Length: 314
Image (cartoon, rainbow, N blue to C red; front, side, top):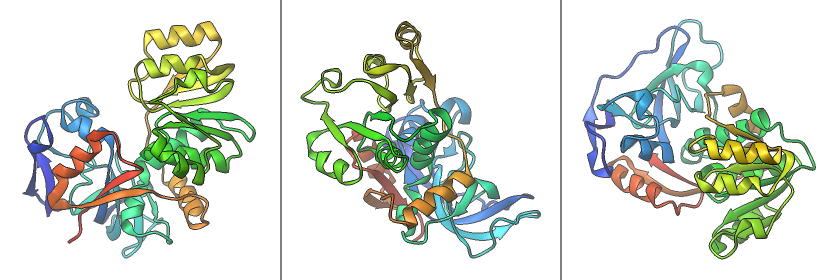
C-alpha cells in the first residue's frame, strides 16, 4: 500500500511516498481503508523531532492519527462495526497509527461510525481536535451550564470545536483570535471575541471558570490572572511549567496538563451533535496525498481556520 514516510527528522522536505506492506487486523482489531486523513500540529512537530517523537522513536515512521474511511476487514471478537461501515477515529495515539497510508489497523473501539451528514474529508478533520476539545471540557474541566470559558486560539482545529462544545453545554464562551475570524467565531457560538493582536486579553476579560490554553508558554501563565479562584487552566502544549504551577497556586487556581486519548464512545456523541446540526466542522483546505509537504507547510503557518485534510484515496 502507499504511505507517506520519512527517514529523518526535519522540514516538510523529508516526507516522501513509499510502498509498505498492508497490515492485517489482530483479534479485536479492524482494518480500515483510509479515504481521508486530518493533519494536526502534532504531525508537524513530530516530523521535526518534537511532538510525539519521544514515543515513536527515530524515523522511519508514518505519521497521521486522524482517519476516516471504510471498514475493510474485522478481526476475531469485533462486534461494534462490520465490513462496509463508514468510520472515523484517532487510532493508537500517541503511538504510531500510520494515518497517512491507504490502510490502518487498530482496536475497533478506537473508531466510531462517522457522522452521516458530512463527507469523509470533514469526518477526518474531527477526531484528534474534536476529542481534545471534548475531553478537556467534559473529562478534565467537568464543564457546567452557566460557567465562563475562555478559549485561546479559538479559530483553530481544537479551538473551533471547543467553542461549540462549550456552547452546547450552556457555557458563556470567550475566544481569542485575529480580527478577521471574529464574525465566524460568533456565528459558531462565541459570545465574546478578543483580537489578541491589538488587545491584551487580561485587559478585556476576567472571572473565567475554565481557560483552555492552546498556545503555551507565557500565555498560560497570563491566563491565571483572568481565572477565578477555584477555576481551572488547562495547559495543552507544553503542560504545566513550574512557573505556571506557582502562579496558579498563588491565585487558588488549578493548572492541569492534558493529552488526548482514543475514545470511540465520545466520537459517537460528537457525531450525534454534528448530525443534529449543533456542531460545524470547518475544513480550510483538502490536499491530495501528493501534496503532503504543502499541507505540512500550511499547518506550520499557524494561520489555518479550522482543519486541514489530506485525501488518501485516489
